[in-house]
Length: 461
Ligand code: BES
Ligand code: MN
Ligand code: MN
Image (cartoon, rainbow, N blue to C red; front, side, top):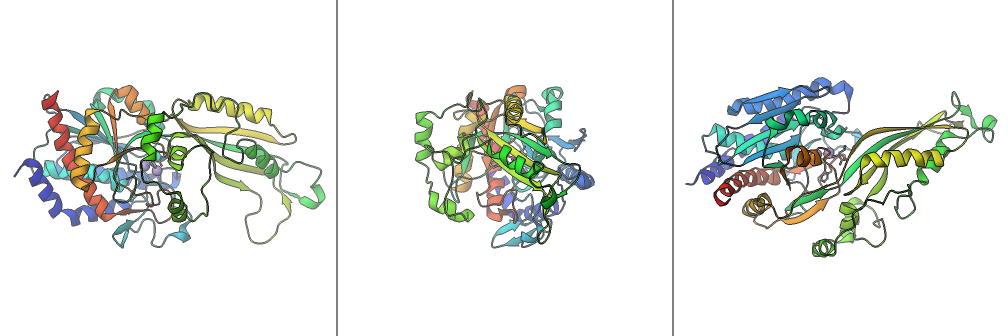
């Protein structure tokens, strides 16, 4: 039996333990944005470090100014490729809690799916690579390459500490290719390699009016209502079609090439079933672009949260003292999030509503990413995925963001391989997040085969 075949055999025999281990990790509520969860976030990092320990893989928990990262590596092999697996153990908040069928941190298997916050984003997906490498090392199956791991706890809050520390970590993280499983398949049964992601810029916009809430009968008509002012301001930012109205916003947007559009049109997209799956009667967006084009390669504006005034039961006739919105812009190559912050501030100044004060707080930003679609690593991954899933992957872009990826490309000067095992109905960031158990196991197999395929590369170059 070849080394990989015997590894695959071991993986099959250990599948129940692999599932139980994911369940253990998912029980830890590692919500990075929640300051009251600091110790749980640390506990989740410790869980990964212990996992590497138990396989005998040297690792360290690296402190940052906020949440720790876990680094691990298998032994260097002279002349063989070096791969860096990147992923995150932090998760998004879980509200609204009443919409979860089982608790977000009580992982439960139903109909072949494992439900829990972090199941697909990203504990379940990154664990596929950890499992394949831990089994190889613990079981004495020689790996034909060196695998390094960087599993961080701040991806969902913008990866600012990793970004700051990356230059110092350049030698330690040096690699030929970063491998990330934190995206999705194109459709059920149609695996994908993702060669592009959108960037993101997030803000909080606050409008302050009177010192305290006022009776809307006594004061309405005499003072500007901050909630109304906020609505005016927000609606000035985007038109009814989704075109962003901030001056200069589209200046650096790279248009899609004819050939890329043609390739995407060959993908099996169906707007009606897409709409049905998310419970809307119609899709929405910029004219002249298909749904995938709008999701993957066009910039967008969103309100992620909106707060003002009375939220309790019944009527309370007030002019609220303040109103605020959390907003985000998805960016595409070659937009720069820093340019946007300046342009947005200018837009707010130009559209200033008198009688209230508007404050813009920039949270974090990251540019869009494009990877080489023809690298030797892509070719290796196509082979590995085809063997594990029985279907050749399609090459796609996605609309989500992984803030650190462009920094990896620049600072580590490496290729980037995004292999998503998830499905579009996995409910990332939503109630009832899930990961199909079969996709978890297939991901582990694909990962093991990927190491073999990448190992073969050094014989050909
Ligand atoms: N895993 C996602 C990114 C993603 C989503 C890639 C869908 C491909 C398809 C990641 O964890 C994520 O949610 N990123 C955030 C970044 C933000 C909080 C800075 C995002 O995209 O909103
Ligand atoms: Mn993720
Ligand atoms: Mn996420």
